[in-house]
Amino acid sequence: MASTPKKSDTEVLRLSFPTEGNWQGLIKKFRLSDDQAHNLTVVLQQVIADLDQFRSTMDALPKRSQLIGRIKRLEKLFGDVASELKRAEKDLPHLLPHDVGSFIGLAMNFTAIGKALGKEEFPVFVDLEMVSAVQDNRLLNQKQIEEAGNPKRESLGLNHSHILLPYLINGIHEPLRLWIELDRKNKGGRAPNMLRRYLAYWLIYEAEDILGKKPTIAQSGKFVEFCEAVFEACRLSYDGLDKILPALVKRVREDKKRHAANMSSPNFKLRILVEKPQ
Image (cartoon, rainbow, N blue to C red; front, side, top):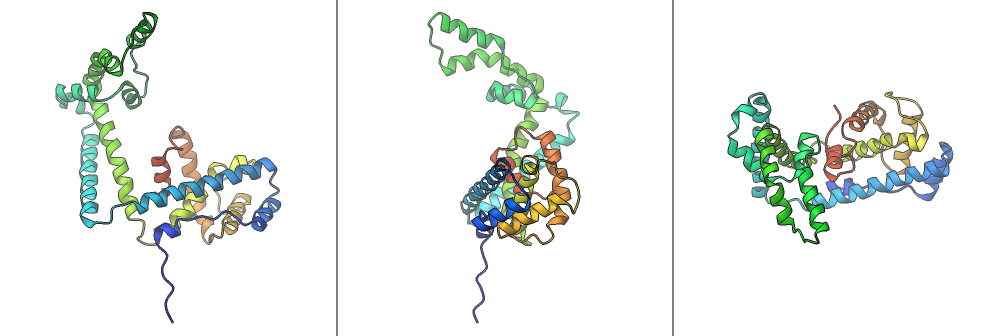
């Protein structure tokens, strides 16, 4: 008798919306209002769309070992640099040559610099110059606007190179790290576990809008029953789901506090998919 072909990881990372019968049974069991049912629909559809995007990303990953080896080496090198910058954090203001700060400042725009420093850094005089040009019916091109801000950007680079350099290095390292983590997904049944965690994460995130109540850190109760019912309706195994929910609830709470502005970004969603909660 021939063995059943093993599903690929991209096939495993697939979610189906509940059938009409299962959907109506879910709504009836938990007495969801029209608005609550709509909110649950949005969550499931968004998870399905995210997983479609993740599968496309994984299908596009290079297959050749040489390219994979190189990107792994790059990830390690940038990780080592990021770690060294972290260790030298107190010394960086006195360590980096002025030319480094000058280059970084001129290479970044004001929006990126402000994001790295955690405050608005767009100079008022550039705004005034743009207003003046409009009033005088002068046309300012992008190059002129950038040149007007060059002294300020260079000054910011010189004064904050110890913050801007780690920001840039970490910004490069993080996508590489996530790529490497995603590439390891096929070891130890990671793909099914990632799918379960990802769906549960967003059910937790939107629980208040769906059930009218925030989920608690517990392995039993109405919310756990709800998650198990959603998994069953989507034809996913919920065996052991109750054991992973408490850690996920903690993670969602922490993410809402620390990363609210980034949670809809593709990179952050990828992090949710591949990283286990601590």
